[in-house]
Image 1 (cartoon, rainbow, N blue to C red):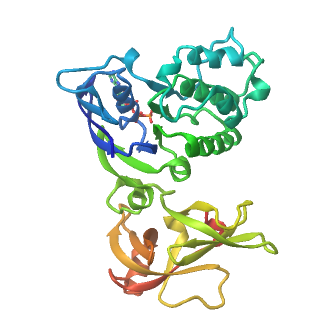
Image 2: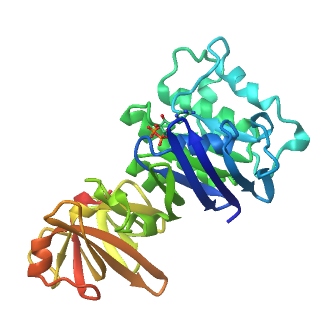
Image 3: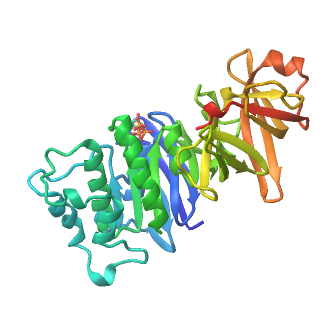
Length: 361
Ligand SMILES: Nc1ncnc2c1ncn2[C@@H]1O[C@H](COP(=O)(O)OP(=O)(O)OP(=O)(O)O)[C@@H](O)[C@H]1O
């Protein structure tokens, strides 16, 4: 871990109390409901807001009790919900606006060149166009490239997909996944979308009412039953796996996940590809014996590690563990309390977790 921050103070009526340590690279997502303080925390990191606190990044102090590095001196790239591009300039000129300010000697480790960014974000055909008639997705790709061309040591992204339609969103997520593989600087990404977290996050910080309440790896955080994220109807667990085989006849792939298998729709991935799957808690059921004569393709051997009543009286959440010699991962199932009683489900019990292949995302 080499990014540490703590900020405490008031912004009008709002109290921010954040204290987090993040990995030195990869995508860390700030996740939480609207108004919980994600943007406020991002603004403190950028130096746009000044609260009492401390911010150390990769061995440098940007803020402590005696010192505050002003916003214009922080090498930070900032991507907002909507790209604010210069309307009188071409795409190329918009990109070069940030690029020119970077001296050769200042180019940090992991710096991605103009040509490489144009290639990674498929900006070549747009370079000579005016920015005025571009789609939202194209504008956002330019905003991301422009932020990176300033040679930042930290990239902040504040709900960069929230203003886009679903087609543009899906496209930009693919570009972000590509960038993620090349960038070596830390990215802090704000969202309240479960899909974005499961696709992009290496690490998650959960925020609630101005406070940072939990932080950790994606599977660990999304399988915790004590966090408010589980109250969401579309809450689910995120599992890491590897494509093991394809069933071309039926258009399915088998994903190996901690010694178990999950069949889901084939989206063109190859054997050996590392993937993430998201399984909603409401799509998981539990049986005491392996399935016979069922349409459900996925039946995973697992063990119950925790049971917790939901806020809704009739429902409980069950955390189950799958494991092999490489480690363990957790899945959450949302069940009726009646089923839990009838099957006498208890912590430690070995069970079978059933998941419809069409429900796997
Ligand atoms: N400078 C400020 N003065 C007064 N109130 C502020 C200030 N900055 C933020 N707030 C308030 O702090 C709260 C948190 O806002 P913030 O934008 O950080 O939340 P958020 O989690 O990013 O929300 P969203 O997901 O909707 O963007 C809001 O109620 C906002 O009005």
